[in-house]
Image (cartoon, rainbow, N blue to C red; front, side):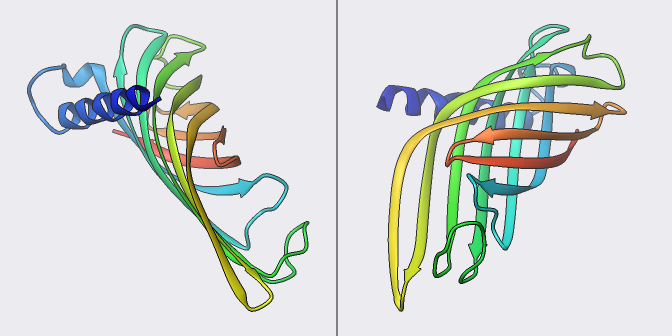
Length: 176
């Protein structure tokens, strides 16, 4: 299990270094995407939520690419809100993933669809009030992201993904 985390960190680090250097992999084969989104935890949407992600991508051919993801999500819950009765709190989680991106059409098209399957590690911190007492739990778990995305004008991306904590994330981003 530790080897998988080390490999994920290593591949993500290599992508990050390559994205910021003029050497190595051709800039034409490398893309960066930054996402902003809204995380919806399983059956209980937050009263306030934010999702931020950076995804470096290495193009392999017209239909496949290697992709990594570094992301962070935050959700705040008020007392008596949501579908389940609770006393409020917040949830934070970070994810570090690597996997494959598969385009449904030739990725040179201005408009395109793709889906990705990424795996790696996730860490969450959940703070929930029980009366006046704040209970905190945190845990490292296996990370997973499975999503479908639309690309417009080769730059703008919108999509939805199921990610570990578990949550559904609605995303919008820009590729450069």
